[in-house]
Amino acid sequence: MQRTEPSLIVVAMFLAALAGFVDALAFTSLGGFFASFMSGNSTRLGVGLGSGDAYAAKMAGGLILSFVSGVIASSVIARATGFRARSAVMAAVTVLLFAAAVISAVMPGPVVLLLLACAMGAENGLFTRDGEVSIGLTYMTGSLVRMGQKLGGALMGDAERWEWVPYLTLWIGFVAGAVSGAASQWRWGWNALWLAALMAAAITVVLVRLGRQTEVPVRH
Image (cartoon, rainbow, N blue to C red; front, side, top):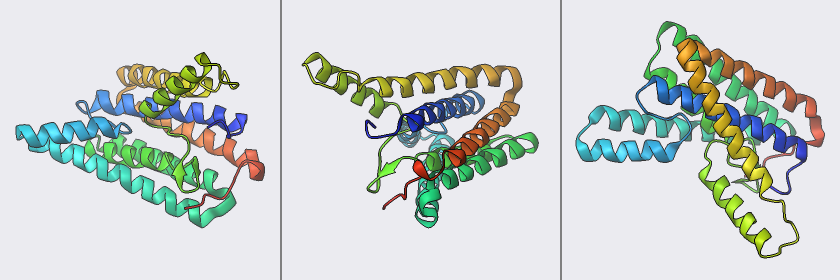
């Protein structure tokens, strides 16, 4: 993350906020399942299988498959679009969120959650280096670990004393998004998804305007 341009670190913070918003909205709307936190869904899958709760197991398993499908889709899009990879992937995320918002207006339920999981999986394809995710946008465990490592290094006298700050900003962005998502769901229910879709559209525009100096080919 320390090799990422400052402008893209700011974008990453807003993407983390978007992930927190969507995750909180999904969690509060459909009984404790997640759109971006696949460790939680994996636990729900295991508990469902162990306790004989077929619905929980199927729902969690479907969400995991949908998330992975989003990751696969973003990888294909990124490879096909080269220098426009980030804006192209973000456009796909935006389309998925708008589709979820439209469907939620007529048929709220598990299908919406599957679309959200797919969108969050695709979002993780925005920042990659040498085929690996360089910034995890929808899961904060890795960011907290890296923050702790960098803080430990700073306490031991490493020259780069502030490398932990970007990881902290990602976590703050995610939590702030989750707070906003929960509050929005309480006020507007599934209609709050339109806010997520509009935020994704705004981020897409920002990535397009950043231009070729920040759009790098994604190598897989």
